[in-house]
Structure formats: C-alpha cells, structure tokens
Image (tube, rainbow, N blue to C red; front, top):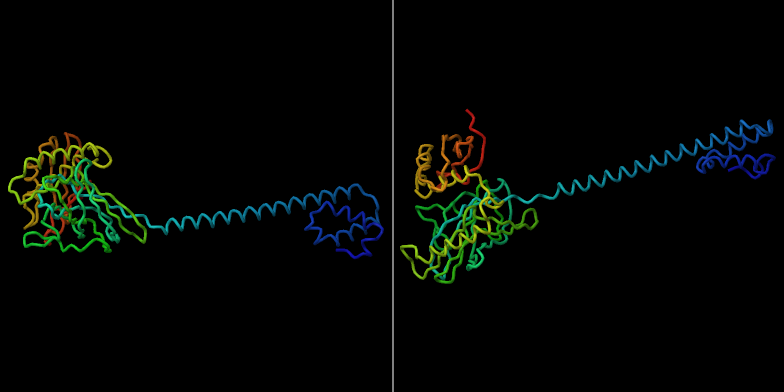
Length: 374
C-alpha cells in the first residue's frame, strides 16, 4: 500500500475514500497507483462532479466483473466435481458384473419309482449365455406343499442338453446305451456354461409308499466373487418320485393317485399363463414333438430328419389341438419349424439338433425365431 508520507498528503484521505468503490482484491493490487493519480487530479482540479461519477461507476463495474468471475469459477468447479462424481458412479456400475441369466428348460411331468430308502437321479436342464463361468455352492430341490421333500445327496454338471429323468441310482454310471456326456461333480466346483446345460441331481427318498414331487431346483453360486441364488422350475408339471420297498413292474395305484394330486397342487401354485409358466402354444407343440422323439428313441442312434419330425407330430399330446406343422427344414444343425396355431399366422420355432454324434438328444429347448432365409 502507499507510504505514510503519501497517505498523509493534502488529498490522501479523500482519495482513500474514493477507493472504497472498488473491491478489496482490486484495491490491494491497484490502490496505491490509483490514489496517487486521484491526488494529482485533486491538486489540479479539486472538485469535479463528472470525475466523482466516473470513479463510482468504474468501481461498481469492477465489482460486478470480479463477482461474475467468482461465480463462473465456482460454477465450473462445481460442474467439474459433479462430472467426476458421475464418471466414478458409472465406472462403479460398469465394473459390477450383472448376474448371469439361467433359464430353466426342463419340462417335467414325469412319474417314476425308486427304491427307498435310497437315492435316485433326476435331471434339470437350463440355458445360459455361453462362456459364463460360475462356482456352484449348493443345490436344493423344491417340493410341493403337503408332500414329503426330497433331499440332495449330490449334483453333477454337464455342458450339454439332456432330458433323461431317471438314468438310475446315484452316483450315476454311464452305460453303453446311455451317454451321460461325462458329467463332472458340481458342488464347490467352477464350471463353464454352454448354451444348453444339465444338472444331474441325486435325490434322496426315505419313506416307503410316499411320493416326492419335485418342482425344480434352487442353485446358489458365485459369479465374479458375488453370491447369487437362482430358482429353476419345471415348465409344465412336477417330476414325481414314488418311493417303493422293492422294484415294481407296474406303477402302483397309490403312486398314480398321489402324482395327480401333486400335479394339481403345483398347477394351482404356478398356473399356466403366469410369469412362471407362460409359454406360446407353438413352443409347447414343438417341445412335445421333441420329447416324443426322445421317448421313441428315434434319434439316439442316428440324426433325426425333418421327415421324422413331421411323422412324430401326429403322436403328440392331443390337448394341443388346433396346432399343426406346416413345414420343417434343417439348416446348419437347426430345425426351422413353421407352426400354425388356430388358423392364425404361422409362427416359426427353432429346434437346435444338438450333438447327436456324441449321444445327445434332439435340440432342447425350442425357441421363437425368424423364418429361415432362402
């Protein structure tokens, strides 16, 4: 600031008062020079209304300019901080992997007998995004309220599709006539998923003359270090295990009656048309054809053909009336099935023909798809 000699000059105090129009930052930088200039003008011309107005106006304009700069600086700083925060949040979200989608493909509805007490094998198919890798921690079966609940004795995994409900007692043993695709132990193991996968579950039944309906499985797994639980339900009806004391040739009447009752309870819990059971009729029709083909062993020894599928179409469940196959074509290992439902427009369903040469079954499950290209 100014020296004492300058501050005590004749017009020093007056110049200092004029300096109050300006902001402090400006005064600290230009105040001494400004006061010296004013004092020289006061010596030459002590009073000038125009000069006083100019000083006041220039001081106010300077204040506004500096305040605008301050607001701009604060605004830019705040915007930059918000931008950094948004970038960090987006990066955190992108860095957090979404859980893989596991979709049940098992249709269910099978009834079979098993020696009790003992463990039999059930099969649960599911679809996934190929390349997904996860670690299976536990598998639990889901029963039907009011009926005994089976327990899990073990689980094996195979990155293939299989709809074999009961290949035999647990642990499984591969035979010459039934390829199990070399399944590996699933519990506590890291597995790489394919498009179609199968869990072979050892189900323990203990009480003779009781039925054990199984709606699906609940699987707990780790993906990228995160724990998830997924529930995969049979798409049409429960699989029912009837516990018998000794091997039987014919299905016991009590088994048939209780199996129907279990299916009725399950249908009430998951009615057709709900989110769990919703499925286009065309898909159900092609699914029934696929299951009939498997049950007739038409494709276990040689690849299924479009002609075979057309002939099998006449053998499917009579409840699917009003549905008919218009054509079947085979391209690159996928059947393209044109299905007409109730006289309406044709729907196209794709049915992959899985690894037949390795003992696999016809493609499972079917899915909606565009018409085949010519």
